[in-house]
View 1 (cartoon, rainbow, N blue to C red):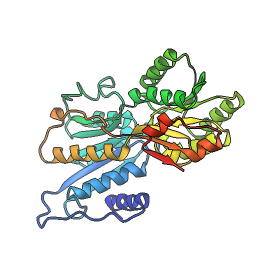
View 2: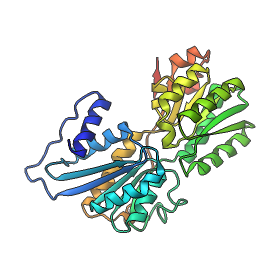
View 3: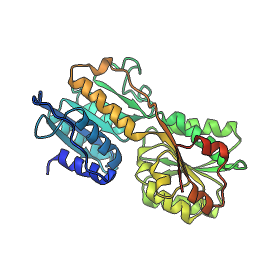
View 4: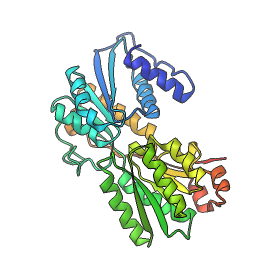
Length: 327
């Protein structure tokens, strides 16, 4: 099975339906090659990429080749994977996950166009010169997670008005963690909230951190918006239920798996917009002149069943803003 066919199969599993093929014109147009490099396999975004490519008329075996590589949350693998993709001479490389995937590709090529998704601060990390005029061969979509993490802390204070200490889970695999953490620390000082920062690399770290938080009777927990933490959403939901910890995450997958709440960007929309940037580049646009885009859709999801199990009443002010209330 080809790489793109595997992606379609993944998309079908995620959405629960077969992806309807786009109307295909008689002339398939020029042959194009797209490469995807990610720090970890993420089925939802992958499905969004697949669907949007098909909507735009791209079909492998007809006018498209797709090459996919994932580092399985092992950053040391990214440079070799980037070089492997560059040798295939794709027309565009789409990077996802942590900023390291984009950095690895940038070191491997200064000419092949790169479109990133999820970079927290692409200017500070040196991916682009400015958001308006990126320069070089790179553009993409920023996640705004550094700005959204303080809002997630605010959400905890709305749900738990008397909270005075919050456990903060940060990813030691994400080089943008310091930038996100600084914003949360500033917001916490303004609200006189003490932060208990826990570095998370893998499942073992997560088990240890939450067991420790439960022993200290932590009143609230915040998982920062790092992609590696998203891969632990199901385990985080299970453990916060086990230890009865009210928690807020950046990722919708967390309340869907039984966690209390999430607030963050609409991830499928981000990837759909990234595919449109890819399409514009394939049609002749230069990455240097395509402004870095920011999310326009944000989702607040609350799991009312979990709130009831924790003995928490979600304030009306939160419910009125919620995009989804899981019952």
